[in-house]
Length: 491
Image 1 (cartoon, rainbow, N blue to C red):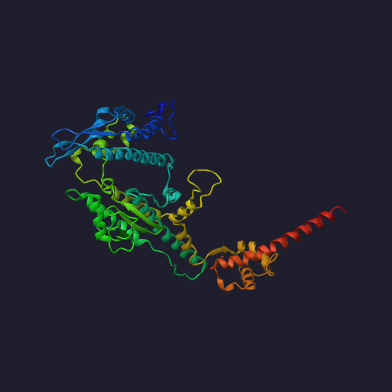
Image 2 (cartoon, one colour):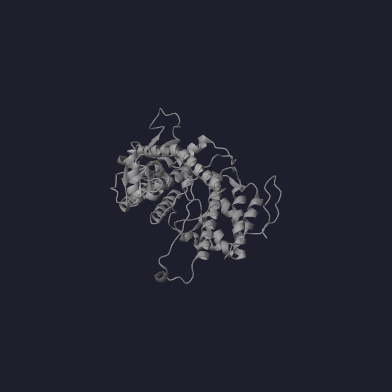
Protein backbone atom coordinates (compact mmCIF):
# COMPACT_ATOMS: atom_id res chain seq x y z
CA UNK A 1 0.00 0.00 0.00
CA UNK A 2 1.11 3.54 -0.76
CA UNK A 3 0.94 6.04 2.11
CA UNK A 4 -1.73 8.69 1.69
CA UNK A 5 -0.86 12.15 0.36
CA UNK A 6 1.59 13.97 2.60
CA UNK A 7 -0.06 16.88 4.43
CA UNK A 8 0.80 20.32 3.12
CA UNK A 9 -0.04 23.41 5.18
CA UNK A 10 -3.77 23.41 5.88
CA UNK A 11 -4.28 19.93 4.46
CA UNK A 12 -5.08 16.67 6.25
CA UNK A 13 -3.38 13.37 5.41
CA UNK A 14 -5.32 11.32 2.84
CA UNK A 15 -6.15 7.60 3.06
CA UNK A 16 -3.75 4.94 1.85
CA UNK A 17 -4.21 3.90 -1.78
CA UNK A 18 -2.98 0.80 -3.61
CA UNK A 19 -0.34 1.48 -6.28
CA UNK A 20 -1.07 0.86 -9.94
CA UNK A 21 0.04 -2.60 -11.10
CA UNK A 22 0.03 -2.72 -14.90
CA UNK A 23 0.31 -6.02 -16.72
CA UNK A 24 3.89 -7.17 -17.20
CA UNK A 25 5.29 -4.91 -14.46
CA UNK A 26 6.39 -6.20 -11.08
CA UNK A 27 4.56 -4.92 -8.02
CA UNK A 28 7.76 -3.37 -6.63
CA UNK A 29 8.27 -1.39 -9.84
CA UNK A 30 4.64 -0.24 -9.84
CA UNK A 31 5.11 1.02 -6.30
CA UNK A 32 8.18 2.95 -7.42
CA UNK A 33 6.09 4.62 -10.14
CA UNK A 34 3.64 5.95 -7.58
CA UNK A 35 6.33 7.10 -5.16
CA UNK A 36 8.37 8.76 -7.92
CA UNK A 37 5.31 10.61 -9.21
CA UNK A 38 4.80 12.04 -5.71
CA UNK A 39 8.44 13.06 -5.17
CA UNK A 40 8.40 16.36 -7.13
CA UNK A 41 5.45 17.66 -5.10
CA UNK A 42 7.29 18.20 -1.82
CA UNK A 43 10.48 19.06 -3.73
CA UNK A 44 8.72 21.77 -5.72
CA UNK A 45 7.33 23.27 -2.51
CA UNK A 46 10.75 23.65 -0.90
CA UNK A 47 11.61 27.31 -0.32
CA UNK A 48 15.04 28.73 0.45
CA UNK A 49 15.99 31.42 2.96
CA UNK A 50 19.24 33.34 2.51
CA UNK A 51 20.58 35.16 5.57
CA UNK A 52 23.33 37.76 5.32
CA UNK A 53 26.61 37.13 7.11
CA UNK A 54 29.07 39.86 7.99
CA UNK A 55 32.14 40.00 5.78
CA UNK A 56 30.80 37.51 3.24
CA UNK A 57 29.60 38.25 -0.29
CA UNK A 58 27.17 35.35 -0.26
CA UNK A 59 24.83 34.77 2.65
CA UNK A 60 24.01 31.51 4.41
CA UNK A 61 21.35 29.43 2.64
CA UNK A 62 18.80 27.30 4.48
CA UNK A 63 15.64 25.36 3.67
CA UNK A 64 12.52 27.02 5.05
CA UNK A 65 10.70 23.76 5.92
CA UNK A 66 13.00 20.81 6.46
CA UNK A 67 10.11 18.34 6.80
CA UNK A 68 9.73 18.60 3.02
CA UNK A 69 13.33 17.39 2.68
CA UNK A 70 12.35 14.36 4.78
CA UNK A 71 9.48 13.64 2.39
CA UNK A 72 11.76 13.82 -0.67
CA UNK A 73 14.31 11.52 0.98
CA UNK A 74 11.59 9.01 1.88
CA UNK A 75 10.01 9.00 -1.58
CA UNK A 76 13.34 8.64 -3.40
CA UNK A 77 14.85 6.18 -0.89
CA UNK A 78 17.92 8.36 -0.41
CA UNK A 79 19.69 9.68 2.74
CA UNK A 80 18.19 12.90 4.06
CA UNK A 81 21.54 14.63 4.56
CA UNK A 82 22.54 13.99 0.92
CA UNK A 83 19.22 15.37 -0.35
CA UNK A 84 19.77 18.52 1.70
CA UNK A 85 23.33 18.89 0.42
CA UNK A 86 22.18 18.59 -3.22
CA UNK A 87 19.58 21.28 -2.63
CA UNK A 88 21.96 23.78 -1.01
CA UNK A 89 25.21 23.24 -2.93
CA UNK A 90 26.97 21.46 -5.75
CA UNK A 91 30.37 19.87 -6.16
CA UNK A 92 32.75 21.16 -8.82
CA UNK A 93 36.16 19.84 -9.87
CA UNK A 94 39.04 22.30 -10.11
CA UNK A 95 41.75 22.18 -12.75
CA UNK A 96 43.79 19.85 -10.56
CA UNK A 97 40.75 17.57 -10.20
CA UNK A 98 40.30 18.75 -6.61
CA UNK A 99 36.67 18.67 -5.47
CA UNK A 100 35.19 21.91 -4.16
CA UNK A 101 31.74 22.30 -2.66
CA UNK A 102 30.15 25.50 -3.97
CA UNK A 103 27.12 26.86 -2.15
CA UNK A 104 24.05 27.99 -4.08
CA UNK A 105 22.41 31.37 -3.91
CA UNK A 106 18.66 31.29 -3.31
CA UNK A 107 18.03 31.83 -7.03
CA UNK A 108 20.49 29.08 -8.06
CA UNK A 109 18.96 26.68 -5.55
CA UNK A 110 15.48 27.37 -6.91
CA UNK A 111 16.57 26.69 -10.49
CA UNK A 112 18.35 23.48 -9.42
CA UNK A 113 15.29 22.37 -7.43
CA UNK A 114 13.02 22.85 -10.44
CA UNK A 115 15.48 21.12 -12.78
CA UNK A 116 15.59 18.11 -10.46
CA UNK A 117 11.79 17.90 -10.19
CA UNK A 118 11.41 18.06 -13.98
CA UNK A 119 14.14 15.45 -14.47
CA UNK A 120 12.40 13.02 -12.11
CA UNK A 121 9.25 13.18 -14.21
CA UNK A 122 11.20 12.92 -17.46
CA UNK A 123 13.18 9.85 -16.37
CA UNK A 124 10.02 8.18 -15.05
CA UNK A 125 8.16 8.86 -18.30
CA UNK A 126 11.02 7.49 -20.42
CA UNK A 127 11.25 4.41 -18.20
CA UNK A 128 7.49 3.76 -18.40
CA UNK A 129 7.55 4.04 -22.21
CA UNK A 130 10.49 1.65 -22.31
CA UNK A 131 8.64 -0.86 -20.13
CA UNK A 132 5.48 -0.61 -22.24
CA UNK A 133 7.47 -1.25 -25.42
CA UNK A 134 9.23 -4.18 -23.77
CA UNK A 135 5.94 -5.77 -22.64
CA UNK A 136 4.32 -5.29 -26.07
CA UNK A 137 7.32 -6.58 -28.02
CA UNK A 138 6.62 -9.70 -30.06
CA UNK A 139 8.69 -12.68 -28.94
CA UNK A 140 10.33 -15.04 -31.40
CA UNK A 141 9.63 -12.81 -34.38
CA UNK A 142 11.46 -13.50 -37.66
CA UNK A 143 11.73 -10.38 -39.91
CA UNK A 144 12.29 -12.57 -42.99
CA UNK A 145 9.09 -14.48 -42.31
CA UNK A 146 6.92 -11.80 -40.70
CA UNK A 147 8.04 -8.74 -42.67
CA UNK A 148 9.57 -5.53 -41.41
CA UNK A 149 8.88 -4.23 -37.93
CA UNK A 150 6.05 -1.72 -37.53
CA UNK A 151 5.69 1.16 -35.12
CA UNK A 152 2.69 3.07 -33.83
CA UNK A 153 3.62 6.39 -32.24
CA UNK A 154 1.50 9.08 -30.61
CA UNK A 155 2.58 12.73 -30.55
CA UNK A 156 0.39 14.82 -28.26
CA UNK A 157 1.08 18.53 -28.45
CA UNK A 158 -0.86 21.75 -28.02
CA UNK A 159 -0.70 24.41 -30.71
CA UNK A 160 0.97 27.78 -30.39
CA UNK A 161 1.13 29.18 -26.87
CA UNK A 162 0.40 32.87 -26.51
CA UNK A 163 0.15 34.27 -22.97
CA UNK A 164 0.21 37.81 -21.59
CA UNK A 165 3.91 37.16 -20.86
CA UNK A 166 5.73 34.61 -23.02
CA UNK A 167 9.12 33.22 -22.01
CA UNK A 168 11.67 30.56 -22.98
CA UNK A 169 9.13 27.72 -22.62
CA UNK A 170 6.74 29.36 -25.10
CA UNK A 171 9.59 29.94 -27.58
CA UNK A 172 10.40 26.22 -27.49
CA UNK A 173 6.81 25.04 -27.92
CA UNK A 174 6.17 27.54 -30.71
CA UNK A 175 9.40 26.54 -32.47
CA UNK A 176 8.17 22.94 -32.20
CA UNK A 177 4.90 23.93 -33.87
CA UNK A 178 6.77 25.72 -36.65
CA UNK A 179 8.79 22.55 -37.33
CA UNK A 180 5.68 20.36 -37.31
CA UNK A 181 3.82 22.79 -39.57
CA UNK A 182 6.75 22.72 -42.00
CA UNK A 183 6.63 18.91 -42.01
CA UNK A 184 2.83 18.90 -42.35
CA UNK A 185 2.90 21.13 -45.43
CA UNK A 186 5.66 19.03 -47.03
CA UNK A 187 3.76 15.78 -46.40
CA UNK A 188 0.44 17.21 -47.60
CA UNK A 189 2.03 18.46 -50.82
CA UNK A 190 3.69 15.07 -51.28
CA UNK A 191 0.39 13.26 -50.73
CA UNK A 192 -1.37 15.63 -53.13
CA UNK A 193 1.24 15.05 -55.82
CA UNK A 194 1.07 11.27 -55.38
CA UNK A 195 -2.75 11.33 -55.63
CA UNK A 196 -2.59 13.44 -58.78
CA UNK A 197 -0.16 10.96 -60.34
CA UNK A 198 -2.35 7.98 -59.39
CA UNK A 199 -5.41 9.63 -60.91
CA UNK A 200 -3.66 10.85 -64.05
CA UNK A 201 -4.17 14.55 -63.20
CA UNK A 202 -1.55 17.12 -64.22
CA UNK A 203 0.26 18.41 -61.10
CA UNK A 204 -0.35 22.08 -60.39
CA UNK A 205 1.92 24.31 -58.32
CA UNK A 206 0.37 25.14 -54.94
CA UNK A 207 0.88 28.63 -53.55
CA UNK A 208 1.41 28.52 -49.77
CA UNK A 209 3.29 30.32 -47.02
CA UNK A 210 6.67 28.65 -46.51
CA UNK A 211 7.68 29.04 -42.87
CA UNK A 212 11.25 27.82 -43.45
CA UNK A 213 12.56 31.34 -42.81
CA UNK A 214 10.92 31.35 -39.35
CA UNK A 215 12.33 27.93 -38.47
CA UNK A 216 15.77 29.14 -39.60
CA UNK A 217 15.40 32.28 -37.46
CA UNK A 218 15.18 30.07 -34.36
CA UNK A 219 17.48 27.14 -35.15
CA UNK A 220 20.11 28.46 -37.58
CA UNK A 221 23.67 27.65 -36.41
CA UNK A 222 25.70 30.62 -35.09
CA UNK A 223 22.97 33.21 -35.80
CA UNK A 224 19.63 31.69 -34.76
CA UNK A 225 17.88 32.66 -31.52
CA UNK A 226 18.92 29.43 -29.79
CA UNK A 227 22.53 29.73 -30.99
CA UNK A 228 22.78 33.34 -29.76
CA UNK A 229 21.29 32.24 -26.44
CA UNK A 230 23.86 29.44 -26.10
CA UNK A 231 26.63 31.92 -26.86
CA UNK A 232 25.36 34.19 -24.08
CA UNK A 233 25.26 31.26 -21.64
CA UNK A 234 28.85 30.22 -22.38
CA UNK A 235 30.37 33.71 -22.47
CA UNK A 236 32.87 34.67 -19.79
CA UNK A 237 31.87 37.31 -17.29
CA UNK A 238 28.40 38.50 -16.45
CA UNK A 239 25.99 38.30 -19.38
CA UNK A 240 22.46 39.47 -18.68
CA UNK A 241 19.20 38.83 -20.50
CA UNK A 242 19.31 42.43 -21.70
CA UNK A 243 22.73 41.86 -23.34
CA UNK A 244 21.31 38.71 -24.97
CA UNK A 245 18.46 40.79 -26.43
CA UNK A 246 20.93 43.34 -27.78
CA UNK A 247 22.81 40.53 -29.50
CA UNK A 248 19.57 39.27 -31.05
CA UNK A 249 18.84 42.78 -32.35
CA UNK A 250 22.31 42.94 -33.91
CA UNK A 251 21.94 39.61 -35.69
CA UNK A 252 18.33 39.96 -36.86
CA UNK A 253 17.63 43.67 -37.28
CA UNK A 254 16.84 43.11 -40.98
CA UNK A 255 14.93 39.84 -40.60
CA UNK A 256 11.31 40.18 -41.86
CA UNK A 257 9.93 38.03 -39.04
CA UNK A 258 11.83 39.57 -36.11
CA UNK A 259 11.46 42.87 -34.30
CA UNK A 260 11.92 44.44 -30.87
CA UNK A 261 11.23 47.75 -29.16
CA UNK A 262 14.80 48.82 -29.91
CA UNK A 263 14.25 48.19 -33.63
CA UNK A 264 10.72 49.59 -33.62
CA UNK A 265 10.64 52.39 -30.98
CA UNK A 266 7.09 53.44 -31.87
CA UNK A 267 5.62 50.04 -30.95
CA UNK A 268 4.59 50.62 -27.34
CA UNK A 269 3.22 47.08 -26.94
CA UNK A 270 6.83 45.99 -26.25
CA UNK A 271 9.19 47.13 -23.48
CA UNK A 272 12.73 48.42 -24.07
CA UNK A 273 15.42 45.93 -23.07
CA UNK A 274 12.90 43.16 -22.38
CA UNK A 275 10.75 42.15 -25.36
CA UNK A 276 11.24 40.84 -28.86
CA UNK A 277 8.60 39.62 -31.30
CA UNK A 278 8.56 36.80 -33.82
CA UNK A 279 6.02 36.82 -36.64
CA UNK A 280 5.04 33.15 -36.62
CA UNK A 281 2.98 31.66 -39.43
CA UNK A 282 -0.01 31.51 -37.07
CA UNK A 283 0.41 35.03 -35.70
CA UNK A 284 2.72 37.40 -33.83
CA UNK A 285 4.09 36.36 -30.42
CA UNK A 286 5.95 38.74 -28.11
CA UNK A 287 8.59 37.15 -25.86
CA UNK A 288 10.11 38.52 -22.67
CA UNK A 289 13.82 37.68 -22.35
CA UNK A 290 13.70 37.81 -18.55
CA UNK A 291 14.99 34.45 -17.28
CA UNK A 292 16.04 33.18 -20.74
CA UNK A 293 19.69 32.64 -19.80
CA UNK A 294 18.97 30.92 -16.48
CA UNK A 295 16.31 28.68 -18.04
CA UNK A 296 18.63 27.68 -20.87
CA UNK A 297 21.49 26.66 -18.60
CA UNK A 298 21.68 23.08 -17.35
CA UNK A 299 20.91 23.13 -13.62
CA UNK A 300 20.68 19.36 -13.30
CA UNK A 301 24.04 18.96 -11.59
CA UNK A 302 25.92 15.67 -11.34
CA UNK A 303 25.37 15.65 -7.56
CA UNK A 304 21.66 15.02 -8.05
CA UNK A 305 22.24 12.31 -10.68
CA UNK A 306 24.60 10.53 -8.28
CA UNK A 307 22.05 10.90 -5.49
CA UNK A 308 19.38 9.13 -7.58
CA UNK A 309 21.81 6.48 -8.80
CA UNK A 310 22.69 5.61 -5.20
CA UNK A 311 19.03 5.24 -4.20
CA UNK A 312 18.22 2.03 -2.34
CA UNK A 313 15.30 1.49 -4.75
CA UNK A 314 16.65 -0.60 -7.68
CA UNK A 315 13.97 0.60 -10.12
CA UNK A 316 14.71 4.25 -9.41
CA UNK A 317 18.44 3.59 -9.62
CA UNK A 318 17.98 2.05 -13.10
CA UNK A 319 16.50 5.34 -14.34
CA UNK A 320 19.78 7.21 -13.62
CA UNK A 321 22.65 5.25 -15.23
CA UNK A 322 24.59 8.47 -15.85
CA UNK A 323 24.78 8.94 -12.08
CA UNK A 324 27.51 6.31 -11.79
CA UNK A 325 30.03 8.79 -13.21
CA UNK A 326 32.18 10.56 -10.66
CA UNK A 327 32.25 14.37 -10.61
CA UNK A 328 35.84 14.33 -11.92
CA UNK A 329 34.81 12.15 -14.89
CA UNK A 330 32.28 14.67 -16.18
CA UNK A 331 34.52 16.90 -18.29
CA UNK A 332 32.28 18.10 -21.11
CA UNK A 333 30.09 21.13 -20.69
CA UNK A 334 26.49 19.86 -20.58
CA UNK A 335 24.23 20.76 -23.47
CA UNK A 336 21.85 23.64 -22.87
CA UNK A 337 18.09 23.18 -22.67
CA UNK A 338 17.64 24.94 -26.01
CA UNK A 339 20.18 22.74 -27.80
CA UNK A 340 18.70 19.57 -26.31
CA UNK A 341 15.25 20.67 -27.42
CA UNK A 342 16.45 21.52 -30.94
CA UNK A 343 18.24 18.17 -31.27
CA UNK A 344 15.14 16.31 -30.11
CA UNK A 345 13.02 18.23 -32.65
CA UNK A 346 15.38 17.36 -35.50
CA UNK A 347 15.23 13.67 -34.52
CA UNK A 348 11.43 13.81 -34.14
CA UNK A 349 10.89 15.38 -37.56
CA UNK A 350 13.19 12.82 -39.22
CA UNK A 351 11.22 10.05 -37.53
CA UNK A 352 7.82 11.48 -38.48
CA UNK A 353 8.91 12.07 -42.08
CA UNK A 354 9.57 8.35 -42.48
CA UNK A 355 6.11 7.37 -41.18
CA UNK A 356 2.53 7.67 -42.42
CA UNK A 357 0.93 10.35 -40.24
CA UNK A 358 -2.70 10.83 -39.25
CA UNK A 359 -3.80 14.10 -37.69
CA UNK A 360 -6.41 14.78 -35.02
CA UNK A 361 -7.03 18.48 -34.35
CA UNK A 362 -8.86 19.22 -31.11
CA UNK A 363 -10.73 22.42 -30.25
CA UNK A 364 -11.72 23.24 -26.66
CA UNK A 365 -15.17 24.88 -26.77
CA UNK A 366 -14.53 26.83 -23.55
CA UNK A 367 -11.99 27.18 -20.74
CA UNK A 368 -14.46 26.25 -17.98
CA UNK A 369 -15.02 22.63 -19.10
CA UNK A 370 -18.77 23.28 -19.21
CA UNK A 371 -21.07 21.34 -21.54
CA UNK A 372 -23.15 23.03 -24.26
CA UNK A 373 -21.18 26.30 -24.17
CA UNK A 374 -19.23 27.58 -27.18
CA UNK A 375 -16.87 30.49 -26.60
CA UNK A 376 -16.50 31.85 -30.14
CA UNK A 377 -13.50 34.08 -29.41
CA UNK A 378 -11.70 31.21 -27.66
CA UNK A 379 -12.39 28.87 -30.60
CA UNK A 380 -11.26 31.45 -33.17
CA UNK A 381 -8.02 31.88 -31.24
CA UNK A 382 -7.37 28.12 -31.33
CA UNK A 383 -8.23 27.84 -35.02
CA UNK A 384 -5.67 30.56 -35.76
CA UNK A 385 -2.89 29.25 -33.51
CA UNK A 386 -3.39 25.59 -34.40
CA UNK A 387 -2.62 26.58 -37.99
CA UNK A 388 -5.92 25.17 -39.25
CA UNK A 389 -6.60 27.98 -41.72
CA UNK A 390 -3.22 27.59 -43.43
CA UNK A 391 -3.63 23.80 -43.52
CA UNK A 392 -7.08 24.03 -45.13
CA UNK A 393 -5.80 26.65 -47.56
CA UNK A 394 -3.04 24.31 -48.77
CA UNK A 395 -5.42 21.35 -48.96
CA UNK A 396 -7.83 23.34 -51.12
CA UNK A 397 -5.23 25.11 -53.24
CA UNK A 398 -5.49 22.74 -56.21
CA UNK A 399 -8.97 21.23 -56.02
CA UNK A 400 -11.47 22.08 -53.30
CA UNK A 401 -13.04 18.61 -53.38
CA UNK A 402 -12.35 15.19 -54.79
CA UNK A 403 -14.88 12.33 -54.71
CA UNK A 404 -15.02 8.79 -56.10
CA UNK A 405 -17.48 8.57 -58.99
CA UNK A 406 -19.94 6.16 -57.25
CA UNK A 407 -20.20 8.42 -54.20
CA UNK A 408 -20.71 11.52 -56.33
CA UNK A 409 -23.48 9.82 -58.32
CA UNK A 410 -25.17 8.52 -55.19
CA UNK A 411 -25.59 12.07 -53.93
CA UNK A 412 -26.36 14.03 -57.11
CA UNK A 413 -27.83 11.57 -59.63
CA UNK A 414 -31.37 12.89 -59.09
CA UNK A 415 -30.32 16.23 -60.61
CA UNK A 416 -29.85 14.75 -64.11
CA UNK A 417 -32.34 12.95 -66.36
CA UNK A 418 -29.59 10.66 -67.70
CA UNK A 419 -28.58 9.36 -64.25
CA UNK A 420 -31.93 9.14 -62.39
CA UNK A 421 -32.89 6.75 -60.99
CA UNK A 422 -30.06 4.63 -62.48
CA UNK A 423 -27.89 5.41 -65.45
CA UNK A 424 -27.51 3.22 -68.53
CA UNK A 425 -24.21 4.71 -69.65
CA UNK A 426 -21.00 2.75 -70.08
CA UNK A 427 -19.41 3.70 -66.73
CA UNK A 428 -19.88 5.83 -63.63
CA UNK A 429 -17.30 8.23 -65.06
CA UNK A 430 -19.40 8.70 -68.21
CA UNK A 431 -22.52 9.21 -66.09
CA UNK A 432 -20.78 11.89 -63.99
CA UNK A 433 -19.64 13.61 -67.19
CA UNK A 434 -23.23 13.68 -68.51
CA UNK A 435 -24.52 15.07 -65.21
CA UNK A 436 -21.98 17.89 -65.12
CA UNK A 437 -22.53 18.71 -68.79
CA UNK A 438 -26.25 19.12 -68.17
CA UNK A 439 -25.48 21.62 -65.39
CA UNK A 440 -22.83 23.40 -67.47
CA UNK A 441 -20.13 22.66 -64.89
CA UNK A 442 -17.74 20.50 -66.92
CA UNK A 443 -15.21 23.33 -67.19
CA UNK A 444 -14.63 23.45 -63.42
CA UNK A 445 -13.62 19.81 -62.93
CA UNK A 446 -10.92 17.31 -63.85
CA UNK A 447 -11.59 13.61 -64.39
CA UNK A 448 -9.23 11.18 -62.71
CA UNK A 449 -9.13 7.40 -63.15
CA UNK A 450 -11.41 6.78 -60.14
CA UNK A 451 -12.22 10.25 -58.76
CA UNK A 452 -13.76 13.54 -59.81
CA UNK A 453 -11.67 16.61 -58.91
CA UNK A 454 -13.67 19.83 -58.35
CA UNK A 455 -11.85 23.17 -58.35
CA UNK A 456 -14.38 25.63 -56.97
CA UNK A 457 -16.65 25.23 -53.92
CA UNK A 458 -19.31 27.08 -55.94
CA UNK A 459 -19.74 23.99 -58.13
CA UNK A 460 -20.72 21.95 -55.09
CA UNK A 461 -23.02 24.75 -53.91
CA UNK A 462 -24.82 24.72 -57.28
CA UNK A 463 -25.28 20.94 -57.15
CA UNK A 464 -26.43 21.04 -53.52
CA UNK A 465 -29.03 23.71 -54.31
CA UNK A 466 -30.36 21.68 -57.21
CA UNK A 467 -30.49 18.57 -55.03
CA UNK A 468 -32.27 20.45 -52.22
CA UNK A 469 -35.02 21.56 -54.63
CA UNK A 470 -35.61 18.00 -55.88
CA UNK A 471 -35.53 16.09 -52.57
CA UNK A 472 -39.06 17.20 -51.45
CA UNK A 473 -40.49 16.21 -54.85
CA UNK A 474 -38.82 12.78 -54.64
CA UNK A 475 -40.04 12.28 -51.07
CA UNK A 476 -43.64 13.11 -52.10
CA UNK A 477 -43.36 10.70 -55.03
CA UNK A 478 -42.14 7.91 -52.74
CA UNK A 479 -44.89 8.64 -50.21
CA UNK A 480 -47.52 8.55 -52.97
CA UNK A 481 -46.37 5.18 -54.30
CA UNK A 482 -46.05 3.76 -50.76
CA UNK A 483 -49.58 4.86 -49.83
CA UNK A 484 -50.90 3.55 -53.13
CA UNK A 485 -49.30 0.17 -52.49
CA UNK A 486 -50.69 -0.03 -48.96
CA UNK A 487 -54.23 0.76 -50.13
CA UNK A 488 -54.07 -1.80 -52.96
CA UNK A 489 -52.93 -4.47 -50.52
CA UNK A 490 -56.26 -4.14 -48.70
CA UNK A 491 -58.22 -5.46 -51.69
